[in-house]
Image (cartoon, rainbow over the protein chains, first blue to last red):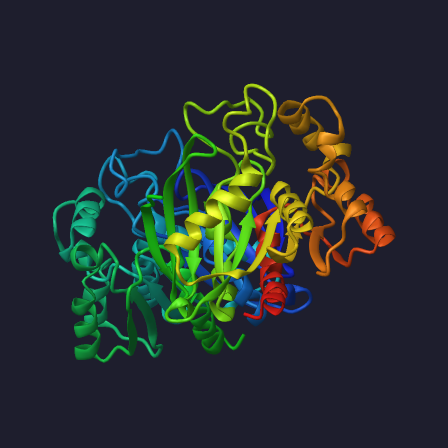
Length: 280
Length: 280
């Protein structure tokens, strides 16, 4: 697969680079960013995937979270994919919470979305092959996953489905029961059709009833998060984890919001959580 | 003076807030941001001014530099003003390097700029009064100043002119001899008229020939900075400092650019430099 480098910067002794490639899976050009820590030459290093939230691209976390500091310290490669397929030929919606920028890390079955929207397969299958081919320092036997909001939910669901691939998992301010909240219901109806068993395979709360992992999932959410009561509803997921034996370290952080100032504040703890699990 | 709070976020245990106020000096509404560290309640804390570069507002440094971490650790209040007067009634230019977003921290004497463009007086006189009135934790007897590019130059010139006010000074990738480079020559011609003694009072290299301070000025610049040879020309200023006895710690950082990924990498060292001088 051909990779086009869009830009590159030095950061905390490592390199942040942005790349385009043609996604045969999603039928469009996809862009992603990689932070390669200084340890990557000559060592191999663990790979940590960061899935962003609604409206975001690779840039939000790389520009605003300060994660390069901790990734450099621990020697972890960070991959930041986009949040959906994009382009003039890719279907979109007027809402910020559907279509481009809002892929929800699932495989759409409904029109007009089905040709392009396959973000879960893109993250778990197509993009890892690109990384393995073009970033030889990436140790694909040591991968973790985390994210924010819609992407925090994506990280938890992909960890629950692929615990042998993503050995560590954490999330900031995640959606955790999309079947029961407006963001999830709107997206799932559009991408998957009316409510059905198809929804449950993309719902962290439903998934954790069926399968639990050996990992402890780390979550931080702010008490001043404006989406807390309507979209995030931590109590549904924490209760399901408790009842079904999934280890979970869910922290409510007093006074923090849904923003990257919050994420930056707790980024070190999340990277350290993954570093321990991935032996970085 | 009335202050309108535009937004507020919690960050590293402190508060980042953005405010508007009517500037009688510049005849427009001015916006600035303040990071108040957790120590500010109940202590008073030193105040560190960050002057941004061309095109920037308060947001660039607050969103991208990660400075809240170190400001929280050391207990320093950070003030991030805008880089010029702004608004529909404020004169502008098609170039990114003149007019709105490009105030150059000077008092314009030429038309159409003279009514609004007085950024040096705004930074040294009008805005400190606003801070002292509305942020009682600000210890105005302990102030430092730093910045990036055009703002790094602003920081050095204001430190050289007001060493008893700004007791510490540092800069990332600063312009240091504006009379001798295209950015400075374009801006000074527009704001101040043809080359004259008026230019020299805003030129760090000219100023340091006349006055030196007790402080050591800390500077970091990247060797891969695309503006290095054309606009920054470190050798002119370092030679003037050496010849005239101004203490200067000027570091060239291998492989880094003119961007906030570079600034973030060395931000801790700059905040620590100011913390030592300001006894934070």
